[in-house]
Length: 158
Length: 169
Image (cartoon, rainbow over all chains, first blue to last red):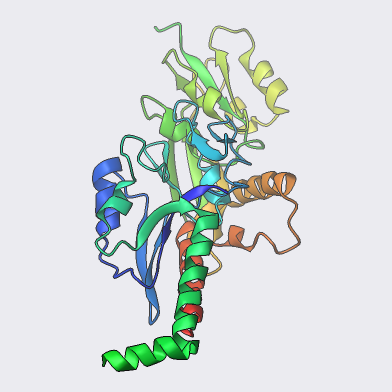
């Protein structure tokens, strides 16, 4: 499964630090955060799809899927913007004839958005492990609710 | 007089209006504008630069060049375009340069916000490319009718709703 920048929505406070950090690193923000009214702030960046649709209409082969990840070659890019129309998430932006999409900040050890996130809501992981994390956390919560001994312990602490 | 003056010939039938030529032209002599639900791409009649970037970058190979000194230009153009230069032919025998050519393409409005975001031909091309790569059921590529901003919005709403589901625990 591909690696991507994911967000734990229950932690995100919508401070837009990720947007600013990305803008400083890449000149254009490749992550965009908006608040879904009444629910939560949600950042959106490239999902690094395993079957990327953005590569389908690319005429010059600038965007391609290689070695289990999406590669982008700015030299070959014609700037036609067809990939942007193909992306189901609207996660890519065309600026100055070049596609701006998340490439994990290749010069940094971890993407700057992940490094800067004050609540550690953003994380860079494989989709599989991410699913496991959430499941594990929910299982822990369930255990706490269902297991009387843990519940008793909690009451005792009070 | 510059002997390297060439005529830029853009094929109206092939052009999908993606603006690759406008963004790649080093002198910026290919313009585009959007108004009244149409995208207009304005090609100059001729180009004195020694480059073919616009033709090389065109995803549809819709741009050709002809040297001015090539004999019977009009016949050449008509041969290549299938006889679609009536208006310009009237300019007379002494005509050296073609007038600017404007290609107008219809824009598609976003189903959600109504803002125009791409030409119908672009959408058609992308749809075809996607269906060749991943066979989707009919209506499976619903996002093609949304502008990139609204696509992000739809994805956001979906993500935010999953949060509600996990909160139930």
